[in-house]
Length: 127
Image (cartoon, rainbow, N blue to C red; front, side, top):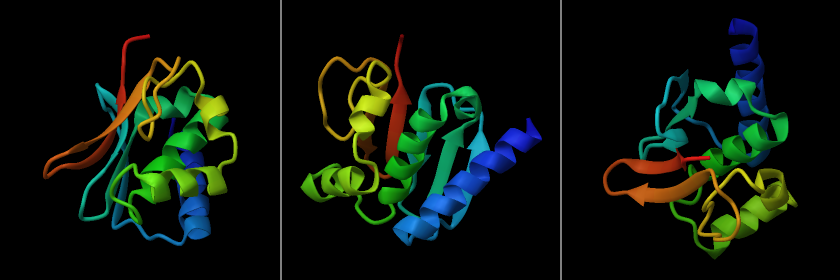
């Protein structure tokens, strides 16, 4: 488990450097209803369950949350950055997300939304 956490932390560091963001704090912890969240003060939390998910899906969640350090919403700029950093990200998450960045479709696992005063979250939904 600790090796998997360290591997994920390395993935987060890699993407943070590539995107040129510096999270104030990164946590990998038990989260019962969401894959990840990003607070307005720069704290980024990821669900420990991501450790067992495919690398491509984990990467989508990591990039999504780190981009919130630059763009606090899911507008056109956010979507453009997702496409620039992860071309084809929607296909990687197909069948695993219900709504990501305001994209509706056949996805069924994660929704991304703003919580007033609490930052951003990627919720896990029912399979």
